[in-house]
Image 1: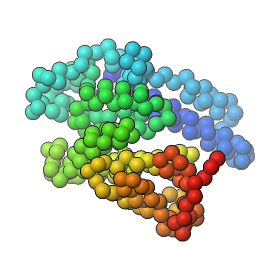
Image 2: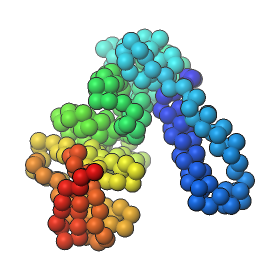
Image 3: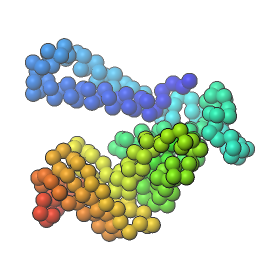
Image 4: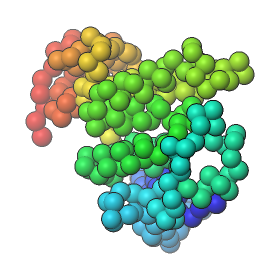
Length: 274
């Protein structure tokens, strides 16, 4: 229905980059294995060229990434005149009618920005968040958790909290009107991500754990456990502090609120300077 969906193209680019990166690692450390797999030098170069040539639509006037090639050439969906009972839109309007408008049933470009935070600075991310939030219906149960995480990254505590609460309560209050058909399991995963990647600001960069305190003002604290490589960690966040405890495993470096810290099993820590 559309050409050059931003999310689709960005994911394809990521997968190609990952394949090239892994091929180069194998070539360096086990060149015979690469030959056994039938991977040739020109093939790696070709994949790299394709990755670099992938088109990612961008609107220079709005200074945001475009959901697809033609998205901004379409009129906005008439939200003001659409009755509340006509949502989800796909159950009441023909897809060809919907696809002729600027409207999204769930996080699309915003999901790509969440997955690849290095792609955009905070100013562009805010422009995209504001624009796409205004035209997203959240007809999909997968949507609100993503908007919660991006809102937390933007330090928009109220929206992050509100989106999280609707995510966490979805099946408790039958928000989608179809809980009788089964739990929204992916949404449950989104709830956990909103807590950890949103309010705890958790990301993994080159295998290293990064944490940022985005705790909403409605809460006194948040804690969770996770297994990362050889380490079983317990992470506790309060309004003024992030504490990382190693329950099992060796010492490790963690980026906390922009500062490297050495975390030891005895709970002693020291700032690591590069």
